[in-house]
Image (tube, rainbow, N blue to C red; front, side, top):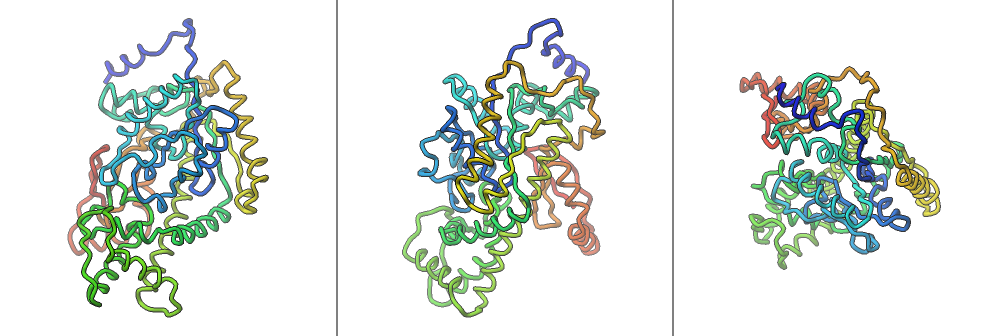
Length: 421
């Protein structure tokens, strides 16, 4: 372990040597529904930007409505990378994201354009620090580093890029209302068609695109609905081939689903369908809260200098002029100042780490699968600890221990899965 630390230390420039200026990258983050993608596209009117998608579900092909991909006509000619390019049936890991994103960033920079990374905050950490440590040593920073090196892992001054972090945020009540409205719009835009097409009762819903919020929520309805439709004379649709072309029988079933939702009667299928929609809204609101917590951790645990843009008013009133004055114009000034500076915009590396957080708490890559809660996926030690302490989880574990003698979990690193209880 000492030799590994020594090897890393030798890569650091000595104090008397000039520090090479790092390439500049803009990172736009924020909770779902805040307008991250819209801002990135609007910035193209001011800078030669290209967008790299870092949303863990939008990288997959398919489910364009459900994952809220930016339609081609709304991209306004701005190049988008890693958007709908990965097979929906595979697990696109952090390592694979890193291997794809780094060459893209370097290629964009080589053409004197500005890379703008939009989406998940966890993925960006992985392409900044995880990329070099994992590539050279094959293990996570928490396993490789000790002492000061471990404390400094994930901090901005260790990044290979000079980053301007911009967070588009809004108040929770406004985001909650917007999320509910967006789900309703998704239903009108064909969300039911998408979840029907990808539905496979034998599929693994913990991998690939099927992890997306809005897929599993409709599972109970689709299971009951397809069986009911077959009993009424329609043939039972063979869902062994996901994302297949829809035949006439499929179209008839999907039309019937929309009719169920529009009907005035409170039939059992309509009740189950509305429950699925409400569950999707609830889980999306929960995602918003998790994303906000993760962004706060980047500031408190890693000392990231994140520049906040408040989109509350623009989301509330839906006025283009408010969006321009409250979000776009301040972002343009932030980036222009960033690009005009010669020195790195990172905090002083000598600033003491006062968080008192150990390396284990900073490990954002460990993936946990909670068998007790129906193969629920948790990412990162913090998220797992919150889940484990939850009342619902503890109640289910207690019941399982009484009935089956459930064993305590073991922990592994990605890409392995963990059976947790």
